[in-house]
Amino acid sequence: MTATLAPPVRIGRAAVGALGALAVATGALESVVTPTLPLLQRELGMSPAEGALLSIMLLITGALVTPVAGTLGDRYGGKRVLIRLMAVVSVGGLVSAVAPNLPVLLLGQVLQGAMVGALPLSFILVRDYLPTGESKLAIGTVSGLFVAGGMAGTLSAGPVAEGLSRHWMFALPTIAVIGATVLVNGLTPQDPPGRSDGVAIDWPGLVLLSGTLVTLMLVLATAPDIGSRPLMVGALVVVLAAFATGWTAVERRAVTPMVDLRMLARPEVWKSCVLTFVICVGTSAAVYLVPQLFAVPADAYGFGADATEIGFFLLPGALAASLAGPLGGIGTRRFGTRPVVTTGIVLMAAALIALAAVHTEIWHLVLGKALIALANGLCVTALVTGTATSVEHGDTGIATGLVLVTRVVGFAVGVQLSGALLTAGTPAGSDIPAESAFATGFVVAGAVTALALLLTRTMNEGVK
Image (cartoon, rainbow, N blue to C red; front, side):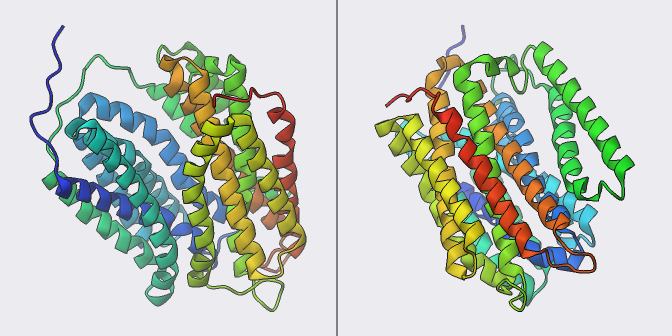
């Protein structure tokens, strides 16, 4: 057996700074759509359902790319894969910047989604070339800078889109991504490839899961038009069933499946997945509906907020989300999984129902969105932590991967359902949904979230 030698090179502060700059740039590029979605819908003539589809394409791609990027990074070297991945992201950002219509912009967002795999690849570089104590500090710094970049993107997207154009709100962070990638390439050493006999990548499973998720989103996006286009919606449902059936069959037979469905037979895993799905459906309703409600003209029932104001109003929610992870980890360690998840579900359901009843002042929406973001972070952190500590050590990655994939699916489904509700609730000849459509969306999300309490009663308390 060949001994593993310590790497002869160590990265310095400049290299860590370059990775941090890349995290800031990618975080900013990732976050520009949310506060400017009403503006994009107006300029590109999108329906609310189409806007919902645009807002989740990057997330879906990221969920698919991340496990593959990590595996390739371990096998071929983190830097090599990271640079190639960021080249794809840069192309996606440029495509989004010049996009003249929705299909081209969707393509750009799909390519940009590769950025979600950048963080684990950065962590590979940090672990390889720094001692354990320093690597933990560097990983925390890079992760924090990604969150900071997201906040910067949320605040700056509106002023850039309104002062320059929507094209520049994609172009500027893309230029920053390209510059940071050049710095990372120049300042970090070329890490050697890992073992060539590592875990195989489940390419058929990846392709079929991609088809399943994209088709599911298209079904939800076109559902409001089923009366006028029943054949198209029916055909999409058939395609969705075919993709889902094929993916299930492949994953059950694969030696190294992308998502090990056999793990779902364990109660602690399937309960965490169901809870994560339900909680993220509730969260995503607020993520989509609140900015839309801010943008409704003031002479109707909204606030007539522009993209700059929407970004400012969403900032407290982003801050709450950044605090929720550490708080969820502390709470889980002290009290166990079930109490933290139960608290988060009660808080989220109450905030959603309150938003349905009271949304006549800006602070109602700002506070409600912040509470929901906090509750979501508490729940997801506790569920991932609880799942990781309830299975055998060798199954940790598989089990937590299931929970994280479920999180993406729940978020995507919730956003698309909310968009479909607004589309269905928009009177003929108008581009403003009825106020009742927003109330219905909040009520449905709150009721679905509250149903999760039936399952939390059957959970183990969790490791303290």
